[in-house]
Amino acid sequence: GESVGLHLPTLSVQEGDNSIINCAYSNSASDYFIWYKQESGKGPQFIIDIRSNMDKRQGQRVTVLLNKTVKHLSLQIAATQPGDSAVYFCAEKTGANNLFFGTGTRLTVIP
Amino acid sequence: GAGVSQTPSNKVTEKGKYVELRCDPISGHTALYWYRQSLGQGPEFLIYFQGTGAADDSGLPNDRFFAVRPEGSVSTLKIQRTERGDSAVYLCASSSSGTDTQYFGPGTRLTVL
Image (tube, rainbow over all chains, first blue to last red; front, side, top):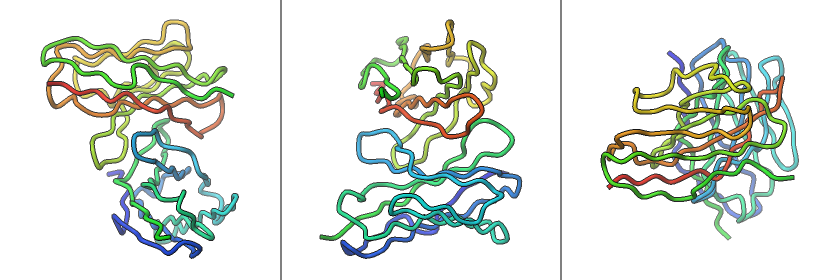
């Protein structure tokens, strides 16, 4: 079936270091992937997305890498800041219109 | 510009009562989605609207849940005979025609006592 999972539920990094959040997906038919950041008491905030015909996409301080061979997605955050502390979700979309989310990774930035 | 808005931000009700949750999507977005998020979990899909019609309601857990979008903009999620297990954050998202990026609102935290 369709599932999105994360390797680690928590991640702690030192301020200024780079962060890498990983995500595994199981549906090889998924053609679109997206990362969200969710702070406590708020809705998911769009960070970056990528289509299955791409391997890498860069935004401001963030990079998403897609490895379709092993069905793996990662989010890299450069020079992590305290404001980056949040729960990060990856989600995938197949032919349907809805997104399938994993349980999230909590990122804690240590000042 | 204005993002997705949801009202109320919090709703406390008693078991068996009826509730309505409102979503106001980003202006011009034709697609609207409802999700439910339990504590410590990712959002789970409930229903998707394209314009006024529910294009996919496969995520609604049972017939106590219903949603409408009569004019293709604002949507209301309706829950009848609420149960304690309905307690969760209900999230709404919207996207513009031909795109996949969904933008979420702040959610409504529903507590059923």
